[in-house]
Image (cartoon, rainbow, N blue to C red):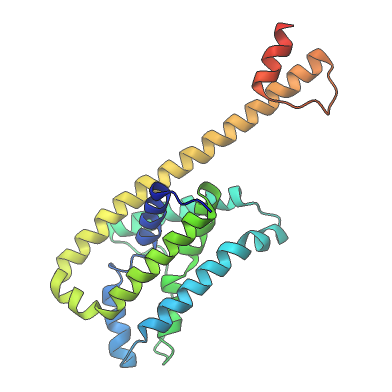
Length: 227
């Protein structure tokens, strides 16, 4: 198990921007007023369990319906893109039903606000790009941050003020937008490389009439062509 600080930092920032716990402080305050009290520990633990379970089983679930991680990563990048637009432009693209249940710590706080479709999709996108231990570390860091924010939400709202929360939300929206565009470009680039590599290998197999068991890579084909 090898940890990479750069990967952990990037994954943490992506998840933090998607979860948007700072921008959701007003929603947390509203839930606290409706239910009287929010169990911060329960909300954080439930969200962490949902994220980690989906991180390990999400790929298997996708394989059952005939979708691979890379295809899901494309969908995740687009979701990140639209979430970023929400944060920057102040519009609502993803609407969720409100609930005044006593189980506010689990629904809608832990799910779908913290561990919602956006964050779950993001996890599989991150897993396709980064190593699993680094993604888990990013989840743990974010859950700790979520717990601290939930515990101190009222104080943070008073300290940051309405304008402060809006500024933070828009800054992280720009960061998330840049990350989503970068992810789409990487996926598209890898697709082109794989596509043209397959064409290159097929062309040289036909030209040199090699066995289909022969390994195919650029260095091998360069050597064969010179011969």
